[in-house]
Amino acid sequence: MVNINALINALPISQLEPNSVARIVINTDSSASEVIVLIEPPAGQRVPYIDPIKAMKVLLQHQRVSPEDVEMCLVEAMLKMKQSIAEDHWVIFLDDLEPDAPECVPMPDFIAWLRKEDFIFTDIVDYLEKVTTVSIQNTQFIGYNEKWTLETLPVLPPPKAIIEFLPGPTWDYGDPDYWEDNVLHPFAQWREYIRPITQQLEKVLGESVYNFKDIGDDLDDDYVHRFLVLHWCCSYKPESAYVRYLIKISGAKDVDELKAALIDPENYTKIPFEMSCWFGDCLETFLVLFNYQPTSLPKTVAMVFMTEQAKEGAASLIAREIDKHVVLVAPKLLISDEWIQQATHYCHSWTMIYVNDFKLKNPLEILASVDELYVVANEKSDNKSMGLKLSEAAEDLLWLGIKLGIQVHYYGINYYSLYNPEDCFKNSEAPKRIAEQLAQSATFTQQLREIRLYNDYGSSGLWDDTGRNLAYDQLDLPFELLRRIAAWQRDFDVNMTPPNEGSDDWRAQHNAEGVKIGIELQATLGTAVKVKLYHQQRWMDVAEVM
Image 1 (cartoon, one colour):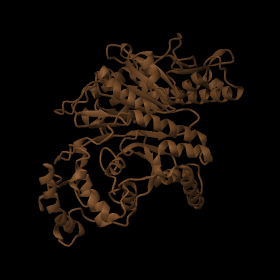
Image 2 (tube, helix red, strand yellow; image 1 turned 30 degrees about the vertical axis):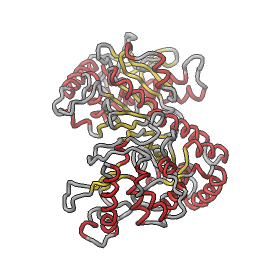
Image 3 (cartoon, helix red, strand yellow; image 1 turned 135 degrees about the horizontal axis):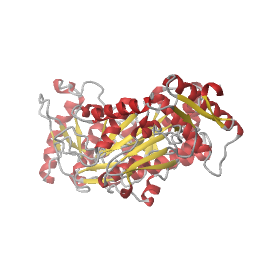
Image 4 (cartoon, helix red, strand yellow; image 1 turned 45 degrees about the vertical axis):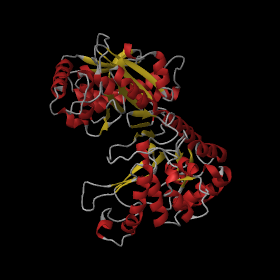
């Protein structure tokens, strides 16, 4: 006898083919295998799933294992995983393109197995464990006037999520419209077979289970109860891995018994459904993106947000910056110490730059010290304009980041991102304001008599001859040179934070870098402005230090 409830619980909430909940970019030698994807779990479960073999391949390539050894390791890994991970934890999800989709396991099971077998470096396993927690808390499922995370997803799909948008036959590799002109195509024949059955189901249930596309109408598509999509899969590829999994999980004795259960009106009463014929009427998933880049010095990311409405999105973005240094740019009254500690829990470290009256004092100083810039909109877009919904200060910072070649990311309040935010500056005053600021820095630089290179904790590393710290925004210097100075200063801050005093080797390397910077700075400024370093207990021209 078919256990239809067991079948329902084996399927994802959002749709039959599970949505991705996280993507982890891993640096490998193979550009084709550089991403690990975490996917939505079956109904009622709260942790992401993973294709363990595909993930293992990426991880082994990351560890520079040869292609030949990778294949041997994968065979051995699969055998060991099958022995170690409980059989009922292995799941096969629908893949629209692949009837013999691979088996997947819960992410915590995969991580526990990695730790047990010691196949992979500990640092990346630790990272994957943090990714799992962050994904559970931050992946957003939005639809039907609701918003959920993996932690809060309903146990069963919302009624409209039971209806599948079917633009073409599952597992058919050709043109999705090809079947329309071929009455002998298996999908065309199945549709005609299933049509009277769906009419009878609608008569019994009082609700449509299949909206049949009007053949020839390019704006129309099939919308189908998920049981009927499964019926098509069982009819089209009865020997596929996915169908065999459905038979197993449902307790059906064979595919014919499962097919009969999938058109039994009584089983349609086990889970509420509501026909919807609009593609956008769905449960949309906003996945979490991660980038694993092991370095001795953590990457630095700036997170800019100015309003209460932006806080939730900013916290979600901060959470994914695992093991990175985060620069928080926000009004002081907007965030508490407790909020910061929670948001930056998995970050390597953080610093705070306060915004007063929506004004940023030194935007160039922020950009010179970061590898990436995130800017979150102040409020929701009204969908009537291309406006970014930012304060002038944030808009200027975003434009300056784009102009200087920084990797920038713009996010709206509702978790959408723009891949081309520069297109929104066509009617903005930001380019004009930035041009005026750059002109002022050129004038200021020409008036200086000398620039001194000297580290003091939390400074810019640059000083005038009166001992006044110079902001990067005051100076007309190439951005790459400013970034080099900022990195040199941050190297000092990291290694000389009390009680640390740096090793002799570090001091020698750090001082040598200071001399190189001084030489480049002098070459940039010419002879009009002297560049000096503190050497042998006095200020010396960089030429003397050389």
